[in-house]
Image 1 (cartoon, each protein chain N blue to C red):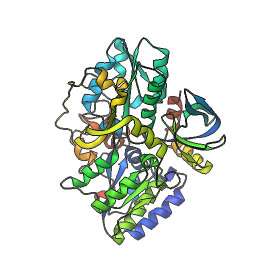
Image 2: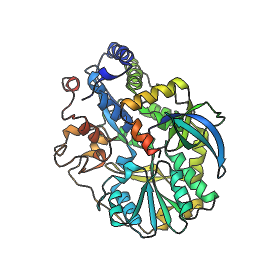
Image 3: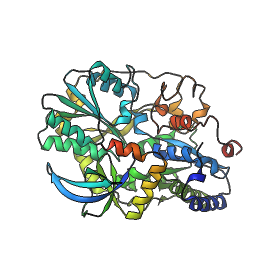
Image 4: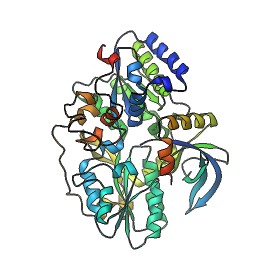
Length: 370
Length: 83
């Protein structure tokens, strides 16, 4: 396991750790929302460095992880068609569906491409007018403005052969669902830094007030994560409920309004199924009727492609903070990143994959003795 | 997935009626859509996610993030993905 020793700002991190130790007089259970935060926490062993009573649970903020298996199977069905060029972010193409992953279709002659930006997929469509170019539009609020803009660009510039297979998800409904889960242990959240660059803090203020949980909008570096922990621990100790911006270097309280306008123009809120968790009301985005000619779900008849998850997978409980990856009997046995049983093992930002990669096969000592 | 890569704007232009920029990431120049960040000028730093500027950031922040991404082993992969 990598540790803070190799971190450049070790002195700043140690100061924050001392502050947290001074502030914390009793045990608290926090959840970091983002997969990127989980990845950094496990990579630097931050959870093991915190005072014994402070536990970090790993949240649902990995869009690749929570994209439902049946959506991957639909993507597979579309990508298999001879006149389709299927484009996606690279990490999504490596997630196995019931019929294998999307990249493996290439060896069977399918045209499957990794793109860095959704605009690259529109450019492919422009260059290949005789093909139907489908972009797998996944992600949270951070990615939705870019994916929406690709639809706007195709629509406005007459690229009729571009469509998006949309499986967008929204963070706040997932947090609400976690807080409403019987047996919920989360007392405060480290909020999703880059999601909030778009959305701002308002929705998180509503959740904090309604459920009486402090939230600190938090970045992705060790010192950012420790800042977030310190902010919520101080609030918890004082019995205060508030949203603190512990990532003010990047996040403005009102977010990015121009980006939200683009999302609003193209997408509307819908119920969406989350892998491992199930259907959450008003937790996703879908293409508005006005842009239906760019909506792959309307263009391709794939709605009845369904898939079942292995029953032994506990990813739903991991995503809600009820269990840790190493609590699972299948972890690193029947379930590895090469042969994942479910959501949290399929992407490097999933909690199970992070634990696997950094050889975290038991709880860190500090947590185990708390 | 929500990774943001800092880069420096070197040139602004329009393409298909979208505001775009040439952005330099550690010496590599790429095209980025800046439709969602107003008032950028050459020399400004932006945080870039999937080819779009998310927010303007200052130069110190850009350096911090580049260092941490390098340390996490994610910078090379991202720059490669930038094409």
